[in-house]
Every structure is written in structure tokens, then in C-alpha cells.
Length: 477
Figure 1 (cartoon, rainbow, N blue to C red):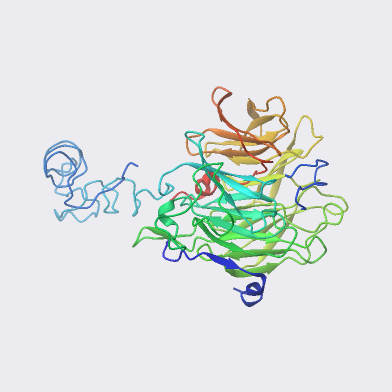
Figure 2: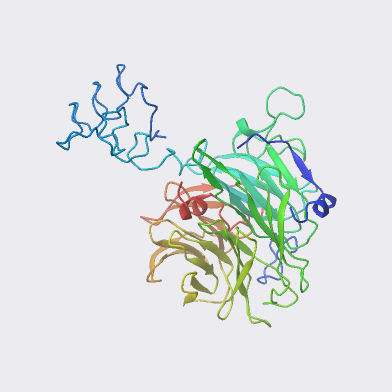
């Protein structure tokens, strides 16, 4: 799906053509002044052991049937062949019994569908005060690159979203979305200089337009452009590639009737569709916009509003991927700061209370924080029944069914602001990013221990799906 990699700078004029197709610091939002592989299958006839075997996948050196017992039968005592096709014809089926023909026994047509390609595990953290985003290896904590995400470096990036390939889309609060490739092999040589010119670490920031891993930038001339969320796309079972991997965003001009949700083409950044939300309420003074976004298993986007009841209740909005209609659900009391969708299908708002919305029953369940003075913070599920959410200097693990706090992680250190950004990586570690700070913490949730600290960030401010784990968790490949 990297057939179209041209660096595309989408200007505001192009938005008019493709129309159907907070401030720099978030000051005033909360009273702060911050700037805020194992191969699963094999080809029939390929070598699967030390000598040329039948590719039966059982790991023995013979040309057996693939059931692992070393004999030519399938192990069931009948005349069937064990190839999973149910016809007993003695053909060269894969012998795993799942019927998909790939030999891995999982029933999936495409092996490795739930893994990020090329396999590098990343977290992308926005440096709001610097106008950049950092690419960090979650296993080592090493910063692998830092990238300017708007031409003037003054867009105040905040939310980041990571797709199946590990690529990031970053929304600038003051307008504009940038996509950056994770893998240099996907980047396009556009300047004629041999090799790919791209950032190599946190101190290596190339000027705007010179980093060849900037895939595209879409100019959105609106001063309230926060939410960002990739779709999973659709699996092509013939090629085993994910297609139509696009990205949702939203903006407003703060005033009534200006809120718009848009779907951008993941390859080019062009606007596929715009969905005006003219009746979006004003949950806090002089603001009619969206704050966070996450997708569900059907690629629908859910969008939240900050706070509420000042003067109007806030909404949780779902824009439907299939027909671009939208549904609005009033939030009790007030909306949250962070938001996510977990593997159970629940939509979560994390603020002064932890709020769970069940799309099937359309019912809310809410549990307040012990200290509800500030609407902290980001949240993400771990895929095993725990929602991790920021809570002042800590990260709380909340049981997704009982809503009880089952884990408390002590994350904040001297000099830190509140733990604003929260993410789970692909090894199960929990990440905490203090608001407007210079550090990010990798925490082992099993023993409440910080196992790595990333330093050198600049006014970090990220609380969305910065690892891509939330995306794959709600729709495994």
C-alpha cells in the first residue's frame, strides 16, 4: 500500500476542490499555561526443516502429514487427509486442520495480520513547544528521529495516531495534519541526493521540506484542529495487505456551527469527505469543537468534547464510516479529557470521572476520581480487561467490567506536571507523559516500576493512540 508516496502539500485552496472528497498552548483549557515474527504460515512445498520436506509444518524432518506424530495419517483414524478442507481426498492440504490453507492452524487467511510492519515498536510523542514529533523505540527508549510537522514549526502539535505500518499522523492545534513514515524503506527520494535524507535522532531535525520521510501535509486553516485517529482499513485477502487505511480528523473555528469531521486519504492526505456537525453544543465558554478521537472495529470515529455544562452538556459523537452520518450522545455531567475505545467495544472518557459508554445499550457508567479537581488525563486499554488512565501523578488501572481500580502506578517524579499522556505498547508496558514536560516514562504495570525514562522532549503533550496499540486492539488482523 505504499504505491503512492509522493510528498503532497495540500493547500487550503485544494480543500475547496476536495471538499466532498487551541491556541498554541491549550491555555485556558485547564488553567495551565503549558504549550503544551514469527511467520505463521508457509508456502506448500517450501522447506520447513533441515532437509527438503513436504512443508507440513509439524517440525519433523519427514514428509508426513503435518499433525506432528511422524506418520502419514492425520491422527483421527479415518480415511481423511487432515488438510482441513473436509473432503478426505488425500490432497496436499496444509495439515493444520483450520481450513485456511496457510498451515498455521489459526483459521486466518493471512498470517501475521495483527502485527505492525515492519515490526519496529514505536511511540510517537508530540513536542508542542517545538512544533515537532519524536519517534521513539519502545523497547530501547532510544529516540530514532524528530520531525517538523508544519512549515512554520508553530502549529502546536498535540495528538498523534499510529497506523498498522507504524506511521504517524499528527494534528496541529492551530491547523494542519502531517503524516510521517516509520520505515525509511517507505520514504521517497525526492531531492536527487542518493539515499533517503531523514532525521536520525532527537538532535537531528531537518528543515521543513527536506525530510523525505514526511509523506504529506494537509493544510487545514482552522485554529482548533485537535482530534486524529487512523482507521484499520480493509484486509485484502488476496494480497494480504490492508487497503483504504485512512485517517479521521476534526476542526472548528471555535464559534457555533463551525465544527467539521473529515476523513483524509491515508496515502495522499486529500480530503475524502467532510461531515459538518452544525448543532455541536458549547460545553465550555466560547468553544464549539472536538477534543479527542478514536475508532471502533467498524472504522467509525468517536469524538469527545472537553468539560461540559458550561453552559451546555457535552456530546460524544460517532461519525459512521459507511455513510458519513453521525449520532450524538449526551454525556452526563461533563465530558472527559482523554478518550479511547477498548477491545470490548466500550468507549471511554477520562476526566474528573472515568466514564464508560456501551454503544449497544447506549448506557453510561461513571466512577469519579477521589480527587476530581482537574480533568486529567489520557487513557488506553491493555486488551486484557484493564483501562489505564492518567490521574494526577499516577496512572490507575481500572477493570473494564467492574470499574474498580485494580492497579495504581506511581509515575510522576519531582518537577513533573500531571501525567497527561497514557499509552500501552505492544509488550504490555504502560507509558506516562507528563503535561508540557521533557520526559516520558515506561512502566512495568506488574510491579509498579519505571523501567525506562526518555528525556529531551520539549513541552510534550500527547494523550492519544501514540503507539498504535489501541487501534489494533479493537480489530485484530
